[in-house]
Amino acid sequence: MPTLLNLNGFKFFFYANEHEPMHIHISKGDEYAKIELATLKVARNTFKPKDLKQALDLTQTHRQTFLEAWNEYFSKR
Image (cartoon, rainbow, N blue to C red; front, side, top):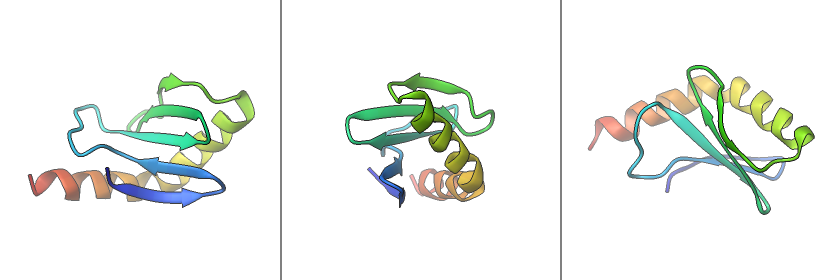
């Protein structure tokens, strides 16, 4: 499970056996979200609204890095 970023208590990661569409998993404590990288669509969420907004903002800020990491990781398989 490659971890891409730990910031403000949020952990951004993907699993080694991922599938399309490209997405990022985010956890903070017991809360969790799955966000599609192309559209920032929330596919799953247990975050409180404030935490989800922060997770989305961080995903948008780091989206290019996440996309590059996804492409690099899965191109080696």
